[in-house]
Amino acid sequence: MADNEKKVRPIDVPSRESKSPYDAEYREQKKEASKNKIQGTAAKKRDRMSGNEAVALAIKQVNPDVMPAFPITPSTELPQMVSTYISNGEIDTEFIPVESEHSSMSAAIGASAAGARALTATSSAGLAFMWEELYIAASDRLPLVLCLVNRTLTGPLNINCDHSDSMGARDSGWLQVYAETNEEAYDNFIMAYRVTEHPDVMLPMMVCYDGFITSHAVMNIETLDTDSVRNFVGKYEPDNFLLNKDMPMAVGPYANSPFYMETKFNQRAGMKNAKKVILDVCEEYEKVSGRKYGLFEEYRMEDAKYAIVIMGSAAGQTKDAVDKLREYGIHVGMIKVRVFRPFPGEELAEALKNCQAVAILDRAESFTGMGGPLGSELKAAMYDAGMKIPVVNYFYGLGGRDYTVKEARDVFKDIREIVRRGVEPQQFKYVGLRDRDAEVVDEFAEFKGPDNMDIRLSGDGVKITDVE
Image (cartoon, rainbow, N blue to C red; front, side):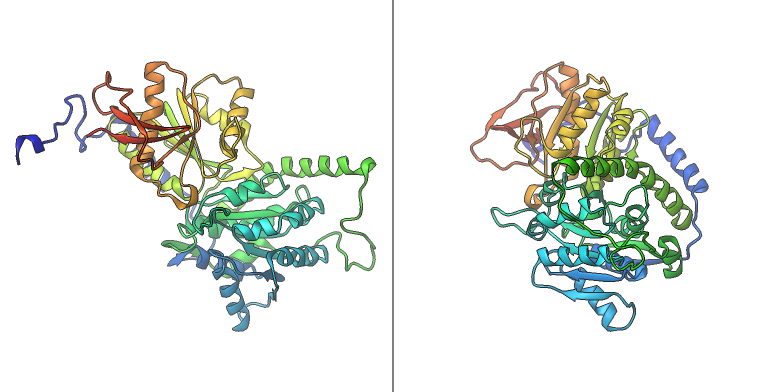
């Protein structure tokens, strides 16, 4: 190899084979935790499934009463698979083919109001077409479930994943839970009815997972036996429903000024109660499945100085970045937000209180001066908790743009440099932004070693790349 082709490793960078002392301790902790892990009472089966296949299986095992649906990519497979189960006589769910997503939510609302356990599925513009009905379902306190396979909203036209569809509906009064993996999407659906039908909640829930990345990619998955699933979910026996002849009632009547605010106050109470109910249901589900869930997942946060907060499938790449940087002795960690509604602001602030800097990654723009949906809400929660540490809001993966392990590592490097230099952080950075005309600024030239980077500026956006 010619001399000019050699890459010189900085002398202060540890070998990639070296492990930090914390790594050895972490492996021992994981080994001990695996010994003490609850195995669960359900019989389990190892399988390989796409996310849509896994959720369709969960729907089959729960066997809800009614499923109206209209196909839209990438959620189309869900009604296809469920209708096949019905045609084969494997479940007795009533499938209703409708002419639009607006009609599918209308039919689900009618079925739920009548006392049936109902669900539907959609993505992107399909959710937007349901907009009016989403608010009706929540204000009528109907415990139905929507499988939302996340896909970016037009325009320009794009069929790939981001969270603009669900984030656009974040204030509609629906509970929202997000999955990282196919198995988690399967589990989330099984737990959904137990939460929505709880008398202290009675709000609809969106079970969200990333389009194509999760919905169509095949992963190893461990499913539960159907009897265990149905015993866990239980039979739906509503106290009030339209077909109850012994208690005549109205659903969704006109509510003018003297009454409307009280309905919103009661919805807020249901949303607040949902936190405890979700945790209780997760604890009970762990006893059945052996899998532990909460409002969010903390990954190697025990002594983390720098943390990324993220949602959905991209948590996987971020975990890989955390592991790699831990090999260099850099104390980083990650929090994966599972439950976005109700938003666990106080709990997240508590989990981040010992960090020196935090990066919040949003997969949806909101075009505000305060950041993306996750960023603005978490920053507000941290402010309320009296936290005064650098917090940077990044946008990533919009329209299905790749988010890599390298980019996650670069985000960690970015917030680490903010702390080391003591500078005011620049907000609203775009990870992986492509811009041929971007100005190249070697801001960190005085810092030699593994954190040396270029930052490509383009308006609010940046592209962070390693310097060779």
